[in-house]
Image 1: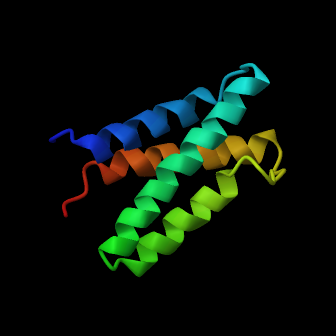
Image 2 (image 1 turned 30 degrees about the vertical axis):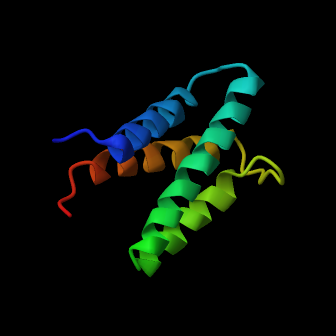
Length: 98
């Protein structure tokens, strides 16, 4: 597996999301929301430029879900589930052939 910039960003976001499973200061969760929004917005731009509309919609939807300005209250358990699913999905995407 070759680690390029996108792979490093995906792995970093996945690790940040997995760390959300622990009891951490609220500021950490705010930072994760901001960095995740930036990361998935970047992925959405790349998908748009490569004419991959389904990936664009998925990445944009995740960026909107995590955006820190109008918070979406899902509850700790649901957010933990979302964090794990996205973290696993990001890591799995590193092994997907292009």
